[in-house]
Image (cartoon, rainbow, N blue to C red; front, side):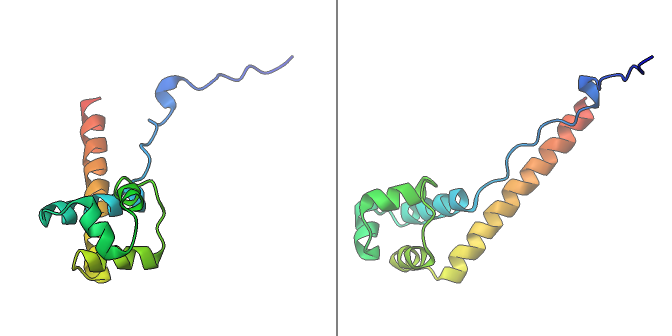
Length: 111
């Protein structure tokens, strides 16, 4: 006779993980924040960086994977160094990761 193997129940499955935040999203958030802090329009920053306003908008919305040259051009237009921008993006990603971890702990305690 065949052996009956029980199927796993839904409670034994781990909860699906939220996707990791993407670098391009965090970069876009930082670029937009810097531009807004300076009180600039998209067109002004784009012109100084030598990119189209549409391209800068797509960078800010996380829709483009810009080259390092493009990132450096926009950083320069916003008067920040590439190191400062990169550090700010890394800090934001760390913060998002910490928020996700604390949310997981909260939900597991609530269950």
